[in-house]
Image (cartoon, rainbow, N blue to C red; front, side, top):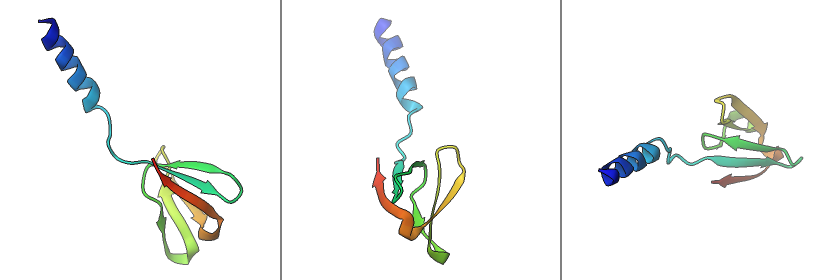
Length: 70
């Protein structure tokens, strides 16, 4: 019975984990943003993405130093 409980608990704990990638965006000035969506270079010379709270962020493309997938 202990094993059934432990297995059920393990399944419940892993089911809540998201496998969607996150991204770290660093600017030329050293500002760091955690992005929940992949940063996209869009019209008008801006890179756009959603931060971890769901807020839309726009940064000029020339100000983006690096984008790293976590």
